[in-house]
Image (cartoon, rainbow, N blue to C red; front, side):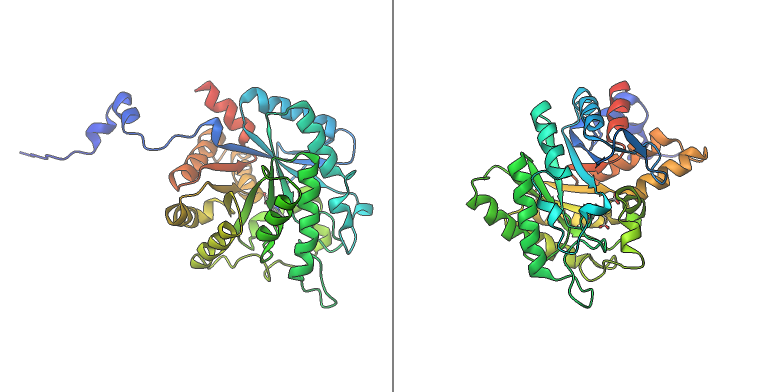
Length: 329
Ligand code: PBG
């Protein structure tokens, strides 16, 4: 006779008890939708990211309307610049008539309650595709870059951005941006720090989407983005960004770095986000497109995994689809 007192399967037997013991839940409130805005008319597909398109500002407003209708809290805006907007000093990055500033103003005017998160980094604006300004040897200079990032962040705040999100990994940029925002009266502008951003090969499709892959060429970002081998260093980076005035912190990429998400959440207990990056999206789309994976089930499972790891939200190219799927449940 088998007298097992403890049978974990008992609680899994019926839907009601599975629901009662469920520890984590993915909701539309957890989703941030990254969008690409270009200076052309209409839409352009991104071949390595099926279902993702570069959008004109008019098309962006249509997508934003869908996001609002579905209850997605915020968009993360990524500009795609023309070659003539790229230079060594990246000056177009803080142009009040530039693509980012125009897109922010259009969004906030039309949808004041939709959160607008902007990317603070110079890579769309530099001829070499690095996130900062380079010296004669091609090394990305820290302090000169921070000065440029401050101008860029202020131009976004000025245009109405709710959240500025430095994705560049320079030292001291959060503190510099925070004090500049305070000095100029932008006390409500939140900072989402890409605090633990790794030098990842999973960004490939994004670089196709923003057109920086060609500019970057054989260049890499190892002198500023983190080594994928490190996790203690991520805690140090998060600690610094919080001390400098970040309101929210991010770990990026997502799925290969869930251990880092969990450690950050446990160590600091602050609003913590993960970025399910372009390469993660591309993998799921490719497998689903070949009929090898169930797209909806796998995407929702991956997104729930971020919640279980401790993330408060996820930047994901699946955001609108996920919101639809969650609504259909
Ligand atoms: C650059 C930036 C990158 C991403 C967001 N901002 C790429 C990079 O660091 O080269 C990647 C996002 C993704 O892959 O989805 N500032």
